Image 1 (tube, rainbow, N blue to C red):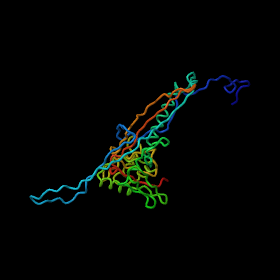
Image 2 (image 1 turned 180 degrees about the vertical axis):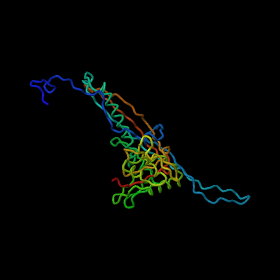
Image 3 (image 1 turned 90 degrees about the horizontal axis):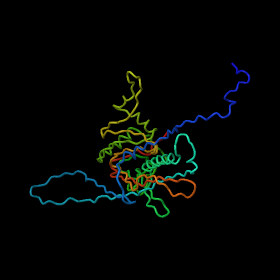
Image 4 (image 1 turned 60 degrees about the vertical axis):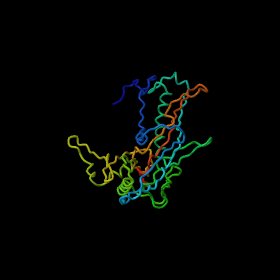
Length: 318
């Protein structure tokens, strides 16, 4: 078929109004599972301190009648600390924006401020998982918090060449294996779970990347029946929401902000986020024909007792 001669179609027309949706679609992930599950407390100093302790090993305990009582040897608690870190993001929008009719948002400054607040929360999650040592800071150096890997020493599985645990007080980081990475496996995972149990921990969440989650889906045992077709709606169900071991029941939670080579096995109530300054949206002073706002949070991570947690490190990622 062909158009009749001199047909004036939409390609010839001038002044057709644009069809721009009034909805802005953003699928970027904003979940922060570890930050969300950590216990929350308030800090009153940029140096946040806490104490840990442990019982001695069990021993034979029998005494004769009438024997004098001697005091047992006592050990002092361990005093640990971490530094608060300032997370700050800002946005500047020219005041001309106030007169513009925009699709998807009434005010650009409000939209952009909400966006950077969500981005900052992802930055916090990344810092909590980061293999980073604490930094005291100075007039020219920013304070930095020590992330979870800097505390884990009691229950870890890692590469046998360069791989090494940190000191465990937040002053240094894990040493990554560089020669030979090891595939994440059920045997390695169960070994760390057993070690945590032997140390008195009761972990409840595993944080791991999508790649390592796919490995975990292949764990064998009673849970190998998790792939099934539901009668009626014919849905295929494949999940590993809860994994039952002799050392406890634990939930697998995929996380986007921890390194794929690291798998964290955590007792969430043994981690605490101490906040010195809660997240606040602050209007900055005008210095010209623009509006400025900043979003600021200051907090740190407290490893209340690292022996209740563990990690499988130096895993292959492809």
